[in-house]
Length: 488
Ligand code: AMP
Image: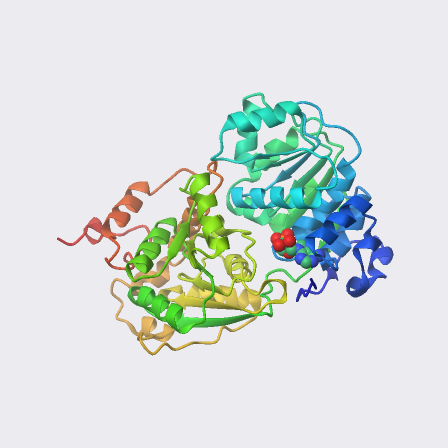
């Protein structure tokens, strides 16, 4: 298998240390044999069918083996998981685990990501005799306790579930010599950083820490300063770049037309399999039910499902039993599904970074992919932020069957219900952001209480599956109660 990643490796600025030894190979001709990995790992890599290290692997692996801290800026799909698991397995091959005292810890923001890392650990570690435990919500504590009691070399966990185990006295972190904080930006979005801080405070100060983030806003720098010591900084794509292999389109329609627009797209595009992203958890089932009613085989993925349902749905999707998966950002984060043909954004993501993550689910490993966004006029401001971030204008697509609208039309409207939206634009966006962040997780988002829950309930009651597509827009928190009541 040839690795055809569209991403070029760039060294982070500000790292004073020379990278000669590694850079000299330049990414193109570096082989796995050059990286200092053991024969056992090289055999496992060969079994996995990998020919060439990806840029993040070529750059990070030698430094991890030197026990350096790493700050890696890389998206999923770049091979970043192997960039830390491969050298970790070699580091852990020496030494033995003690009961309830894991030797290394990988923190992941979601259950799916944690499960995927655990799978990769098995693939790459198949010729070494290392033990691991996966601590995620939605799975019984007893099985996890049994593994911990036996002693594990690597613990792969979501922060909430790990702290639950710690508080029950089932795990001690004082022997952790190697820590990985994966998807740190997503941890931040989901309000997990206080949990991560608590977890880090339970570990020895002298340890090796590897932190990965898809984006590198200033706040991430501060976190890096807090958790890492003199890290080697590596990035494999400029933050928030969109893959060149993804062809993007934009359909501008009213909220009410979005479902018919989606159906028209599903019929006209050559869709092999697709993720359909909604901003809010409750819309996930609305869209899924609507698709099913119109004869599309669609599954859904959101944070309210238990682990078994999620696993079953994912299996069905991966096997091709269902072609369409409607999902929220957090539930779908990092899903590694090969050769996804399409990503549809049923809503424009509120957070511009999420756009990059969403469309990154397709066009992976050099394959081409399609990303189509349905945008209503009042979502223009989110779109502008996305274009500002990626620097790429998204071309418009007109659909024959569905009447498209225009962004300007919104501004032409009389200053009635909608007209006030401009002055309140910040608030609804913040609320929606919080809601999105809280809506899915490993079952233990700790920050933020469910404010507005009554209002949310009222809004949900308005919507039956065939009902109006959107709640009143532009009114921020101040939606009058009569607008939220279902019409008789
Ligand atoms: P990740 O970015 O860790 O989510 O990895 C994305 C996908 O790339 C996974 O399915 C890996 O199995 C695959 N992968 C990782 N490293 C390589 C490599 N060197 N060559 C080919 N595929 C790889």
